[in-house]
Amino acid sequence: MGTQRKRKTGKILGIIGMCAGVAAGGLGVATAPDWLQTAVESEAGTPQRTDAGLGSAVVAAVELGITPLDGAREVNPAVGPSVKAVHGTLKDVELVPAAGGKAVSGTISADGSTWSTLDPLEFNTEYRYGFTVVDGAGRETRKTQSFTTVSTANEANALVFPRDGSIMGSGQPIEINFSEPVADKAAMEQAVKISVSSGQEVLGPQSADPP
Image (tube, rainbow, N blue to C red):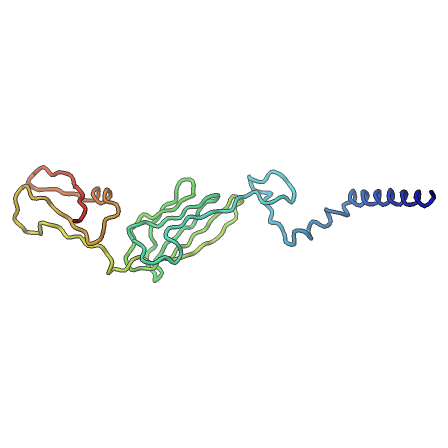
């Protein structure tokens, strides 16, 4: 009986000692840095951080949608490059020829999420992107990448009929034949403008598939 009482007394004293250690911060709190193995960057000053502590980050990672892709080749210069950021904003966006020259003009949307070009690109030219992304905590990340437009040999040509100086009847249609397939026919038709000096009525453009 005496031995059993001593064991029970020892267990009780052991439990009391563990509780005292936790209350004093000797367990758990003291070992938190060992669990992390690295410093946690503070987000206390951001609008998205409302609770103190060692909780996981509450600022969502920025996702980027970039056109063209990094390293892309034979890019159609008629398709304007763009950069879109989700969970972040864009600043200091620059698109320039790799060999040097004037930067391509662009505009950033009102919410700062999207940048798109205003000027057409050149054929057979390597371009380099450079832009800064800002996440919800105000942290900035610089990104760079490049792409190359299609070579001049693959540029589409247009053949107009009747030819300049030809004498035709008043009902002769004007034909424009392209050397490459037209991907956006509606946009092409909107871009074609025809006027006549005689005041003759001109019907709108009509597309036709090649035979």
